Image (cartoon, rainbow over all chains, first blue to last red; front, side, top):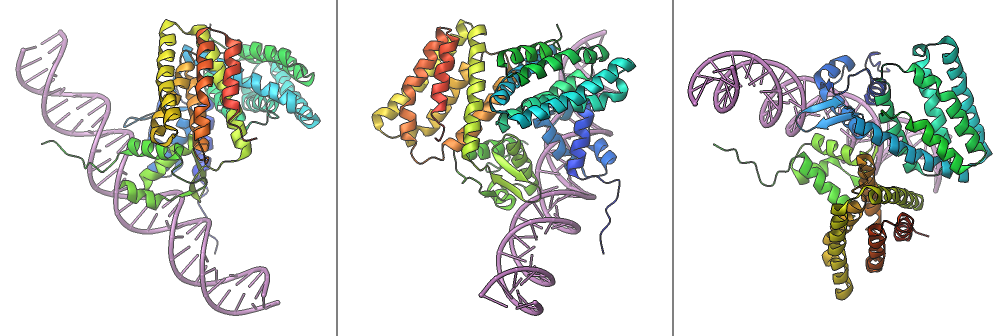
Length: 219
Length: 219
DNA sequence: TTTTGATGCAATTTCAAAATTTTGTATGCT
DNA sequence: AGCATACAAAATTTTGAAATTGCATCAAAA
């Protein structure tokens, strides 16, 4: 007799993924309180499970935790955005350099493929003039491209850290009012990065990565 | 009527600190199982509190967690040691460079002071021929020096990440059989780093940081 | 009118036990 | 004798409730 678990009931990893997604797509306001009790009712689990998930998210940098005061969606600030950008540039430049040193033809193929998908979506955005309807798709494709770029670096630590920073970066980015201008300007930059990477021109690739990321900074 | 809390009973942060200290000073074998029940009895708290602490330590990279299989002290490997070393070099080089660019006279003073304390302890080790009796002292002083070196980098993210990597690095280092040779050879290297930093010679300082850290790699 | 203190409420944190899962061992079958 | 299966023991995970802590509202005094 197989036990049937309720369809609406989610286990811990699923709850983590759902909250993670909501946080990086700005479905919570910055600094908004994340009440255990509310979330417990939404996900149909106990307060302790929620607590565990929120702890994990707090070490992922998406949630701020204060002893005896619970959890909040992480607040943003100009300094923090600057910090995130600079740190991301450092990691992506180093990861890309290492990938160019170690990457084989297989890596080149994966990078080409990732860029192809990304540019297709970016073209779609440009044609239709709106970005909202493909935002999740675009978001995934952009991550794929950047992650593939550094995927041959042979450093799990660098890659894990980069993912953490990327998510935090994204959490702050999506809260902006107009994303459209941001998205369409990326087409050329992504291609420039791709071409420099395939040419194994480390200095040029670093330059393009810097340009691509640095303009996200609020000035 | 003031409530007196039992002296032996530790709260969550204290338990975290104690376990953290034990992990980075190799009081657990690599891969050793960390049983909730045992720890619960030692610290006199519930299994849930232990679980929470172990979760935090696992995101700090000191403890490995497997779903339904509990927690273990993190295992080491040659690849991981190499990765930790290379990543630490990257962060410390960048942090030192930024500190040299932004640091004021106050930073120079703090760095000098940290080096003075460190070299004093290192001299003590060299004279007495043994390292065990000052190991906690030395360990703190070494951390102080490296943290001060990057403390003017103006990047909280870089500094936090560096601390995580430093702790993981240390966790693996202290498990070696003979630490003595390691410690005494550091005197010159620390001074070289200090002098290059004070001279604001970024390239030289990066070179010394690389040499200092790279020789820890198992070859 | 402003500040200070007390009281009630809400949220967080801890606890002890039940439920689920894994691990180790012994027994039966090939 | 070797392998697989089933049972028993141990450990992890979840649960629901109790206890502690923080927050806000309101009253009283300066």
